[in-house]
Image 1 (spheres, helix red, strand yellow):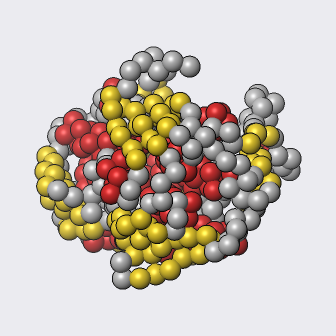
Image 2 (tube, rainbow, N blue to C red):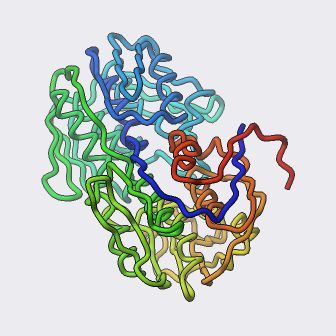
Length: 446
């Protein structure tokens, strides 16, 4: 495990490139397992989650070759239908291996998915759709595995109860080799889903959106190899945008697909932010003063849940009171206690919501626990140094931004969480003038 030691207060400047999308590449790796041919994926981010996924590909019998930021995958035959518990439980995306295993071997054993502790994130919506397509499924609490079998997947009509990104990805991949037509309604419309669709279509799949939240898949007999470049990471783009605005507005960010972050741009402009496009990239800065605002996270094209941590830092520097209402996950404020150590004036609260069971995107259990889904932030508040611990990936980026604008030297433990989604984050920040060092951490004391 590693830690960051950061001395805040520097004005940052220079060029930085947005890496390939974490949420796109992990699904692309699984899509490559749907064919026996070689699939070449470009613009690969070298993050720890990537290497976990490659281990899983090798566990089921695949071959991988990584050269720089280009990856080749070949799975001529699937030799194991079981995802190892000790690897699969580390990452939520492991559940999507259900699709190639059922499609090519008609059987799959998948452990409960892992990843960051930002909510329960059940895969019941994935399983229900696969059952509709001809699979049988049971969960064995003794071994911690979902056991699925099929005589052959077939097309079906399925409507998701709530928005699910990975659920949509799973059923798209299961449907491409199924017999007949599949229609998915209330499907996720995140840009990463469309990136997956483009990849699969380049492999010979027949997928299209008939409406923004309706996807139609015509099953084909086989898929073939392809070469495909994945999209830039929109979460990383927003992280650097907020960092630029708070540290002098002199960072030029390359490889930003602006249309994919419109949900951020509209709010950023509203509170006093602005941007300038040049050949060297996009520069985000503060026009005058930062205004407070009230936001609620939402599925695309709304304000993404992954952006709310960095946005909370932005609002600590606004002149007045702001709120963030988290509607996607039930445990997304893991950074709050850490920021209060730095002097941030914020507290969690329970928003008044009619019909919370249908309003929230997670499975809301009324009366079983206190759902503190809101955050009140009072600004403008100067931040000072502190010793902190990362709770999840996006919380890690949040604490780094806070440390870079704070007075004094801060220490952040558990940055391995952050490195699940940001390639060489400390080294890239150094090139911009940040005073940051990564060292091996000693035992963390509360």
